[in-house]
Amino acid sequence: MQIQTVHKNKFSHFISLIGQSLRGREYDYTQGSIRVAIVLLAIPMILELSLESVFAVVDIFFVSSLGSKATQTVGLTESVITIIYSLAIGLSTAATAIVARRIGEKNPEAAGHAGMQALIMAFIITIAVSLVGVTFAPEILHIMGATGEVVKEGAIFTRIMLGGSVVIILLFLINGIFRGAGNAAIAMRSLWLASLINIFLCPALIKGWGPLPELGLKGAAIATTIGRGIGVLYQCYHLFWNKKSIISLSKEHFIIDFPLMRSLIKIAWPATFQFIIASGSWIVLSQLVAKTGGEHASAGYQIAIRNLVFFILPAWGLSNAAATLVGQNLGAKEPGRAEKSVLLTTKYNAFFMTFVMLLFIFFAKPIISIFTHVPEDLAYGAQSLQIMGAGFIFYGIGMVMIQSLNGAGDTKTPTRINLISFWLFQIPLAYLLVKVFKLGVEGVFIAIPVAETFLALSAWYYFRKGKWKEVKI
Figure 1 (spheres, one colour):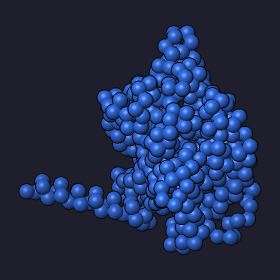
Figure 2 (tube, helix red, strand yellow; figure 1 turned 135 degrees about the vertical axis):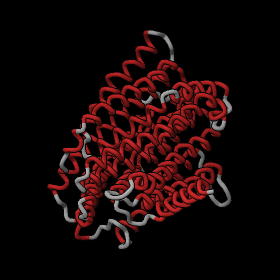
Figure 3 (cartoon, rainbow, N blue to C red; figure 1 turned 120 degrees about the vertical axis):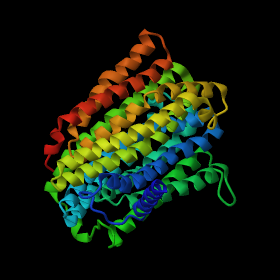
Figure 4 (cartoon, rainbow, N blue to C red; figure 1 turned 60 degrees about the vertical axis):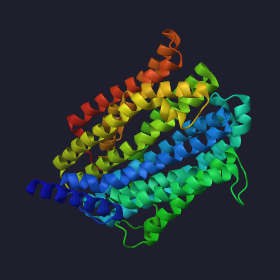
């Protein structure tokens, strides 16, 4: 009877923590139970990025009904957009690190000032990126290995998606500001709002529901951009007008602070380059699959990648919790607590990714069949998901280690790790397996988990060395 009471109390306590995490109440993450801190941060962060992953899956689900050419267009465009994600994540990483450090020092005014400087930088960058995307959309698809027919049908999709890069960058950046402040609930809600709108508008604009026009592939791009844009508006309300928020920006923060911008750039450029290295590697591999295996291999691979992303992003949410805990605890002069937080988060992520790994290994074909019934696409998709999924536990470990170093402001070490793991290891290995060992597209699939395992072990080594505890920002 006593044991049942204890279990009941633990369950009630956990349910209470879930409610607290979703409401976004203020909490001091530099004191008290580390497990509680992880739960309060991780639940909304996991839900946030679960909904971000829904963007990718929803688009490919509805677009796949338009045929292999449309599926390939979305996949190749997303591969290019990962560069924009890299810019957004780089700025977001810098904002999270500095905001978390200032919050840990109990200085929310300085945290808000840092957030505004990051927003100013984002607007400048976005103008250049959008102009390039709108102007050179067909050329970008051609470079990615798309056929003339795919370029002709898909250029409008790519043009809209790249032209709307402002909402991608702002959505990531502002959520990074909120995460650094420890208010992951607002970040979660903004992604939920954006994703739910996209889930409705995507099929509605593709098929032409009710009074809405039938726009086909173009409708998917418009739906995604509108969804993200409304999510950004929701963020801005809490960032500028909701004075009850943990972090709030005002017109006084709009004055450009060049020393602070230099600090942001110092953290952001390696973080941006870090993710450009990773996304650039994915682009090269996508191109290699398209040229080696053709249209069906490319379509199947892109569907598998979307499913991979669907499960990686929630795990990344847990990794972001570790980054916030590292930043705030270093700001509070608690490096030991920061390290314990990371090790416990790694344990949780490893458990989750082991489950996903088994799911991909044993149920790859049923998963891919949800998105396509084209036999060739299905075969390639199932094969790639099985092989790439075999290393999922190492993806989870590597993500926590990398994000923890980023959260400390040590973005240069993860950049070096990514450069070696992806460009000096993964890409050469893929070409070796494809060209020398004649494994075809299967060689590309094999190179991915092997490189991710190497990355995880390297990141673990540098984290355990502990130099990240000495970083000043």
